[in-house]
Length: 360
Image (tube, rainbow, N blue to C red; front, side):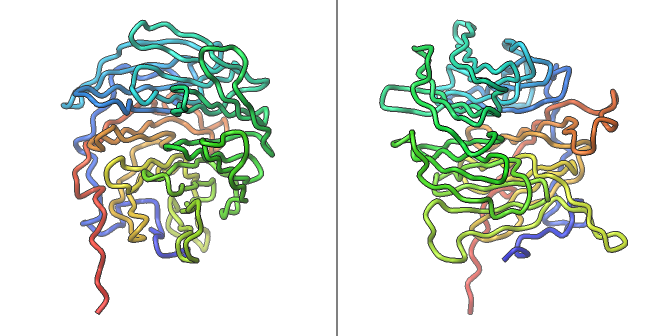
């Protein structure tokens, strides 16, 4: 099934006009970070205003208020002692958690703008997520020290921790589903109702290093993206042999029998439709329908690697961050390389699932 989704190319200019997306209405975020962006996250809280958190290698987390027109205004900045790798909002939107190269997990209360260290690891913390427990909101963090730790925020010691097979590279949470990807292509699944043991462990179906895992909107499974321009769809409970599959994406057209592949840097699920985006080192993003095994839209190159993506709570804004992602080594990281966050207004037809085709 690997080829069902395949674009065959990462350059959407070769796509048919009906599947070619329009970037002309995209708006740039005002006053973006000064160094490479590592992550972006929209607040899931209901309300008339969207808040966007942006973490950066410049050691800062910035929070912006986004108007319905796409206009943006900086609201708050807080710092780590090293580059910040990951950010996440609490479910009610009142707090932001961040993970840094300073080995710290921090939480910022947006009402008071007070920031506190709520956790620490022995090595840089790569990912952080809020989740709801019986005792209220908690934070889970994953580190290059090969552990994940749970934090109560009211106590200094971790509420629990799990030893992983390898360094934690990526993690996502949806409802009671926690999925993490480590070095050596291990994927661990945890049921947060029983958070101290792995519910399931598998080797990634993709052959190369895992870049990102992202939970389905209905928490029935997750998507995996890797450095080899490939994405996998994986259900927690195996239904039938056709449920889990992988497909090619973010690849250049063949040239002299050589295909250049690009890393899939991020995957984001639409909060309403359950469709999803992939974004890569090639500077393009695509919208997909996993149930119909169909690409909905592909977009022209945005002028730099896309390192992070996120939908807002209603799914009518898709934010994507452009920065150098080190995929071609240090020599390609020039001072001219763009560092920006773009806000793409989402039309329903861009992300809406396609109606099923009835077989005669």
